[in-house]
Amino acid sequence: MTPQNTMKKYERALASQDWGLVEPLLHKDICVTFSNGTYKGLHEVKSVFESNFASIKNEKYTISNLHWAHISNTSAVCLYEFNWKGMINGELCSGGGRGTSVLIFEDEQWQIMTEHLGLNAS
Image (cartoon, rainbow, N blue to C red; front, side):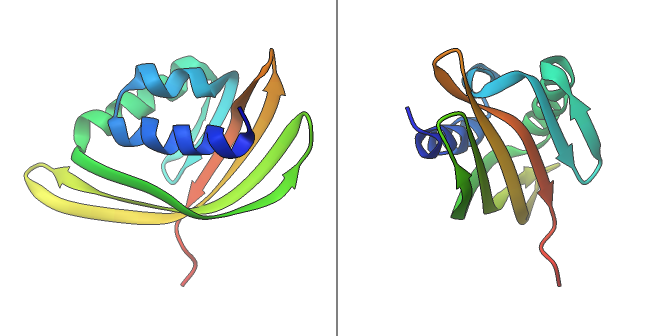
């Protein structure tokens, strides 16, 4: 598996809204920053992801325009755009922004070590 393949799997896993598919792609010490805070470790990240999954029904999630700023045998940095749309409380909602993910190669697999998501600059 390559870091590029890992990000493709991550996009599909997030779109599935199934934590069981997302978790294997994340490092045990994952750190995720959303607009509402920073979450550290699998326990905190699981909680916020599952909360998002529960609040957004029929979500469509995409990652596009990936730019690999760095790739080595043990680490990779990817910048991208993300978009989502789905139903929240019966209303169609959507959003998106920019993301940065840092991946590391450990225990013979690529895992996301950190993810930072933010709004697009105006």
